[in-house]
Length: 307
Picture 1 (cartoon, helix red, strand yellow):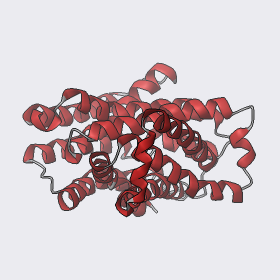
Picture 2 (cartoon, helix red, strand yellow; picture 1 turned 180 degrees about the horizontal axis):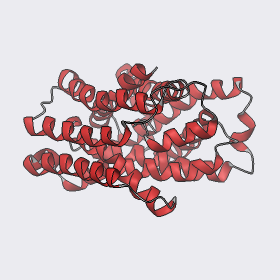
Picture 3 (spheres, helix red, strand yellow; picture 1 turned 60 degrees about the vertical axis):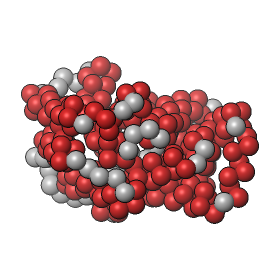
Picture 4 (cartoon, one colour; picture 1 turned 45 degrees about the vertical axis):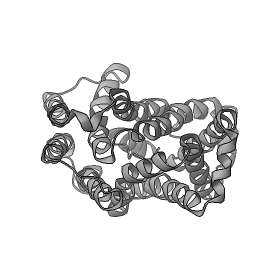
């Protein structure tokens, strides 16, 4: 499951870049959320948790989480990757641990350790070195900022998610995010450009939307939760984190014809080393299945780029 999660999440920059440059951006964003919702709702129904998605107690929280963690992040990725390539996007997405540390300090009352601060400095250094050396690949600046801010909204949505887990399970939370996001994005599409629906007549359009929604959203999420419920978080993260950016670059090269510069590769490797510094050294084995609260903490620690 950890390996499957790595492969599924690694396809995101290339698939999002491919769809963002060939499809109407709002149609692509709404379509991915709808496909993910169609995939995840049967799982929630089988678990008997459908009522929690629309219950008065959690529906407003789920709507807020959906807008911040799925609607906003999908739009920032789609519109950002329309202008910068997938290799540049891969590097910018490595900024997530920085936002995680910042939000944990501001809202969770945590005090960063010297190791965390050192790891964060390494990640910043890796990203800055690549951006500074090949600024043309990260132009226009507003597009690079959209992609670079995406992990912030992922992490901000976790701050809202944690108080609801438990009693909500992670898969129920995922269904709520996708479900409400599909409604919001579909309404936005119909308001902005309803004529874009005509693109759905083309098999390529349907194929790209289905592949992105199933692989990058639904499959990567389920694989991640399945892995961390059975394996050590540190071990799983150590396997997944280095693999995603490296496989993302390979996907961009083989499927989009992009090329990573030596400085891009060095920057990504430096950023990866900073992430590994954060997760190495914890317990190596999980002796029992994680509780929903433990899974929630795991998601907060490292979020797969699919929501």
